Image (tube, rainbow, N blue to C red; front, side, top):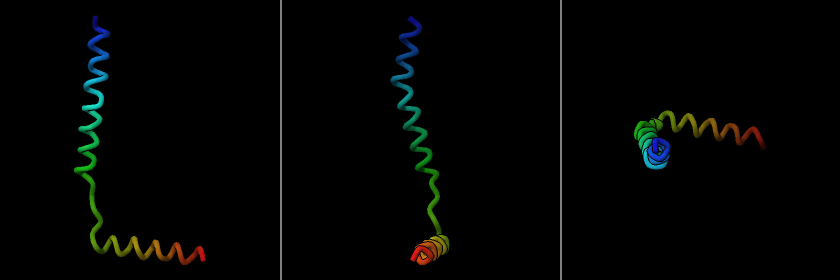
Length: 52
């Protein structure tokens, strides 16, 4: 009988907890400032120029 409730928890609450964790991670995501974006783009261009 207890094993049935354990499976119910795993099947119902598992995806719910995973969804909450995913939502939390997306909400806490930090976007780059314009200065950071420019530094990233400059570094990327330099890497591509080195390959040529």
